[in-house]
Image (tube, rainbow, N blue to C red; front, side, top):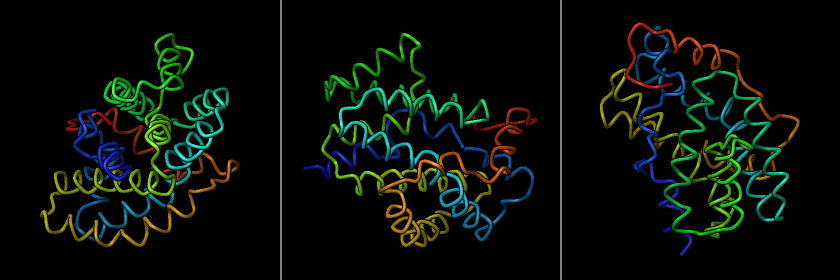
Length: 226
C-alpha cells in the first residue's frame, strides 16, 4: 500500500511547479560550465552528494523523525533552521512555494492534525514552510518507511535535474536516461547516509552552488524561476 503513496508523493509530474526551478543549473549552463553529458553527470552527482544530502534530504529525514515522535516544536525548529541555511533568496522562495503547493495537494487527502497545525502556522507566518520538511511529514503520515521516503526524495530530485539538463544544454532523451541509470548506486548510498543525519553537518554546501543560485537572479534571460 505504501508503494503507491510513495509513487504519488515523489512523482516529478505532481502539480506543484517543480518544473519551473533549476536550483542554479541555468546559471551553470549559461556560464558554459555544464555543457554536455559528462558535465551534466558531474553537476548532478555533486549537487546530490555535496549539497542536497546536507540540506533537503537531512531536513526531510529529521522531520520524519520528529513526526514519529510527535514533537511539533522540533518541526518548528527545523523549519527555522532550514530558512536560515538557504542563503539564496530564490532557493528559499522556491522551497516555500513547492512546500505550500504540496500541502494543498495532500492535506485534503490526509487530513492529519500535525500537518494541519503546521499549515496553520505557515498561514499565520509563524513558520516558513519548506518542501523538504513537508515531504518528510507527509511520508510519515502516509506510513511510507523512512528508507523508501528518502529514496523517493533523492530520485525525484535527480529526475528534476536530468529533465532540466535535457532542456537547457540540451541533451537527448537517451542521454537523460543514461544519467539516471548511472545514479542508482549513488542514490542508494546517499539514502543510507541520510537515515540518521548528523545535525552538526546541516547546511554543509559547496559555496559555488549558492553563488550560482544568487547570480541567477540577475541573468539577462531566464527560463526558470531559480
